[in-house]
Amino acid sequence: MKEYPKKENPFKLLGQHLEAIGTGLKYLVKPTRITLMYPEESMVLPTGYRGMIRLYKDVCIGCTLCAMVCPADAMKMVTEEGKKLPMINYGRCVFCGFCVDICPVDALKETGVHDAAFTNRRELIFDPDKFSQDFDQPPTMDKPVRKVRAKIDEKKGIVYEPDD
Amino acid sequence: MTEEVEKILKGGLEVEIVPVEGELNVGPQHPGSGHMRIFVRLNGDIIEDVDLDVGYVHRSVEKLSENRNYIHLIPLIERPAILDSIHMNMAYIMAVEKILNVDVPPRALYLRSFAAEVNRIASHLYGMGIFGVFMGHSTAFMWGFGDREVWVEILQALTGARVTNSYILPGGVRRDITPVIMEMTEKAIKYTRRKLNDWKGIFVNNPNIKARTQNVGVMTKENAIRWGAVGPNLRASGVAFDVRKAEPYAAYDKLDFEIPVYKEGDAYARTLVRIEEIEQSMKMLEQIMREIPQGNILSDRFFKQIPPIRLKKWWEGQHRIVMPGYYASFRPPKGEAFARVEAGRGELAFYVISDGTAKPYRLRMITPSYRLIKVFRELAKGSRYADLVTIYGSLDYFPPEADR
Image 1 (cartoon, rainbow over the protein chains, first blue to last red):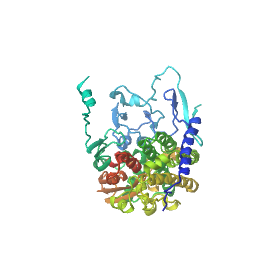
Image 2 (spheres, rainbow over the protein chains, first blue to last red):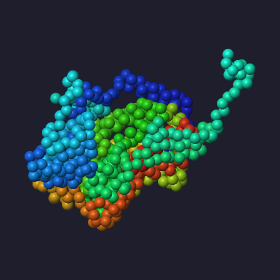
Image 3 (tube, chains in turn red, brown):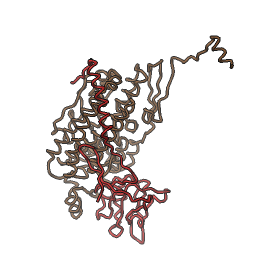
Image 4 (cartoon, each protein chain N blue to C red):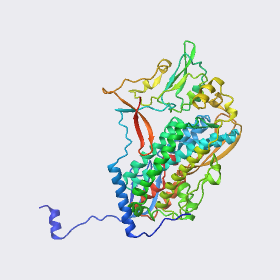
């Protein structure tokens, strides 16, 4: 069991005041900022990131396992021309990735997209046709977006390196 | 000249008398209260009584669990404490595993400990950041959240999500550690060790912080036990209790670590315990990376059920486990199980009763923050009003976790 020192002499306290100010000054001169300048800069997410999900319609065998394992009832099965296919409601999806993991034929895939925006709730429901396309939103900015990748650095914590 | 000014000039000054006793609402809109209302009864500057109006972020996890499959509960039970989701997930899965009677391979146990310790560091840094800004030290707030990001990045690389990881499954874990993640962790440990020195310079050893935290919210050893304090708050009061030592789970029986215990029981001691726990966690991470055994990360019972084509693609190719169809709605045998882990804020317990169907008959979840409600109330009595936020921040109380 430990105890911290109770009565400290005033000189030590003064030293600690100076140390605190000194540490602050150190970071004033050499700041370690990790701010990502979104949307001018956009992060490329690592492989395996559980982003938005995409369906491969031709691969799907309609086994309904994805709909069964979905914890949020986001995935539902619909019958299209006699074939059962999943559709997803992104208003409910919690991005747990269970459906991708359980699909026996790998008809579902995690994409690295996570920053989508919709104007109304109906757009959040993806029918099998929309679900089986790569989700791509037109850029809202005129300037090109700088793609960066986060890396852990021993000195600065996180640094963003341009993605090639 | 108006009447009032005339009165003042004549000397008949009337001062509005401020009542000595009064009541004050702190919150619920988060001005340093979290998602709850702190109803403070004041006598001058001294707090006479505190009533905690909790429940603003109640999610009804226990009732909802009676209507969901076991696998569907994984994302739900980690929502109450998103900062600490690995621990929530692990305790629940440990209870389910006891009912299912599954053996977990050693590599998966090490990976559970790895994820849990990374999560503990992130959770403590978050708690210290909040504590700092409660006392007006906004540098600590920025640093806490910034340094936490490094560890969240590791969790993201390991599990695929920043906070709601859903990483642990009955029988194992979902993804294997890669050399890239190990390298990231080594760098993160070096960075955090360096940064903790600066933390000590600007925050922990800062005489301003010491003046605000020492002898504030003192919880004696007897009181800590009587009020049912858990976790770092209990250890700061001189009780050497840690579930990782008392009832080792995951890989903790094979790891060398000390549990920091302080005698004083005040807000400063609680901060010191958290700082030292971060150091211990990093030590454990290094040991895990050194000693992690090779092997499978999912119990053979479930591993055999994965189709061979998928195994080749995912396990051999990307070191990821894919779920066999069994998980979609498995029915554990009749039985009940209790499991506890040491979460970031203290002891977390799950009690699951299975009646043989695909849904639990009853799930009880006892979170560390829930036990802090009583502690906070008792500690605040008799202290000064200015110390309310210090006591609150030093306890690292997390309202959603308490409300469940």
